Length: 320
Ligand code: AN0
Ligand code: CP
Image (cartoon, rainbow, N blue to C red):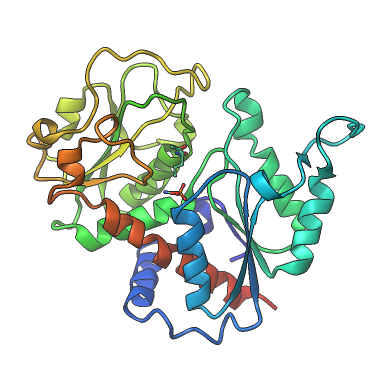
């Protein structure tokens, strides 16, 4: 594997889940694989889980890790070609990525969307330039349109906790006070649609009107604006806010209460509740659920290590 950006970078979903769970059972068996190899984690935005779990996964594989918080500690990056750099940007991505590629065998990049111009964000211009100019394998740590390490984690977590062969999984929009990216729901939808094609899940998306995701990510999903109806018979509810894709980056007022709570949970098949975190308590998801027996959020976050480890292992095996 030379790039981990989307579900298209994985051939066999069941096999990658099986490999990740094998690493969970025996985390330190591949220590020699990463010896004298360096992972660089480059953050243009904040992170808790992605930073720590990917670092831990690399350490389990015997790698050295360097973290670069570009947003706080790096020079202001220019990403456009053909500009005279007489403004606030100090260093071009052409040099910055190339230099980081000299120091590292594998790089990870987190780069959120600007949520201003849909075309710019959905072209993944920054991520693609980073891949091109750094010259080493790159893992997405959440890009403008996707969060594949999170989605792989979610697939692993569902496989681990399912009680029926083909569980009903519902992605449920939740309220928020800020305009958030579509990356997590896009990515979850793209992984679940592929899992559904392979007969692994039955997938529904529930969101208020105006919050449709880009169709490229949702082919085959049942899509509804009726939350109560969607929750009927659900085995897993995946709670997440996102801003509008259609009216790009906008937040529309929603009259009905979309926050997941125990009353809504009662409509499900005693569903396990998931969220990628960070979560705003009693705005996106009720405290009673987060502190109750149906929440999987901590186990889900814990599984981030095995998703990162299976991806880094495949990349290390591919290095010359
Ligand atoms: C980010 C998002 O929704 O993409 C990161 C989630 C992993 N969340 C926030 O900015 C709160
Ligand atoms: N879920 C997730 O990616 O969390 P962080 O933003 O804290 O890394």
